[in-house]
Length: 292
Image 1: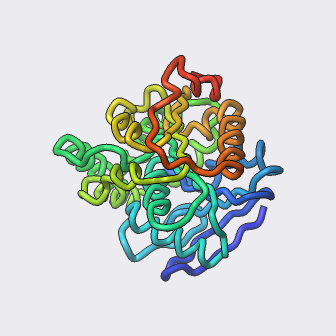
Image 2 (image 1 turned 90 degrees about the horizontal axis):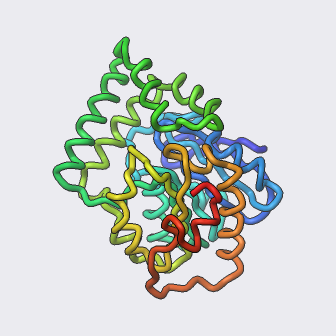
């Protein structure tokens, strides 16, 4: 594992590189860090190089003077890839990381995209704006260091990451609750803006896209995102048990399905023809995860 820091647009970003092979750029959920992808790198580091870039104000990265959003993060990741000389990587993004991956893939050449319980796939309507206000208020309390926030955050994360495999990372995330609260508040505020709706960009992707989702994700319900997923050309969908991060919570099921998708992505010519949703329970892709 090689960890380095690069000054990108005034932000000191921590970049964690592990493994060898074709590049996989890992983009985590808000409040998370590079450790999200430890289990995936442990299982597949002999086949791929995992480039894990920690968001500003997270892990070992410095703060940003600009608010957190998928659009801002896409700018930083694109500039980082240019700085590192990484060309045509595979992107794997979770939550805001998925929305960031869509933004990047719509603007520059990438081999393919893996979206895990991704943001950006729901319409920005009155209901979503109300949810975002509630969540932004919750994290604003953490930013103000409310005495009750860490305990409430811990309960929240028992819903977000309930699987035993995620316990060590859940402990780390909870320990950093006050440190990441500002970024989380900014991120939730950004989700309520019109530009957070990335469905049109996702539908315009002419590259392989695999969507990995929790069957019952309370943070990003599949029922609300299904139309946005179905609009992606040739999309593949696999359902997993667990919470909000299938690669972290179900690594033994996720890793072989990811490896199969990645190998196909780099070995086949991407098919830009419109496709249909596959892999719903009982479908041909459902078996890939062995947890559906």
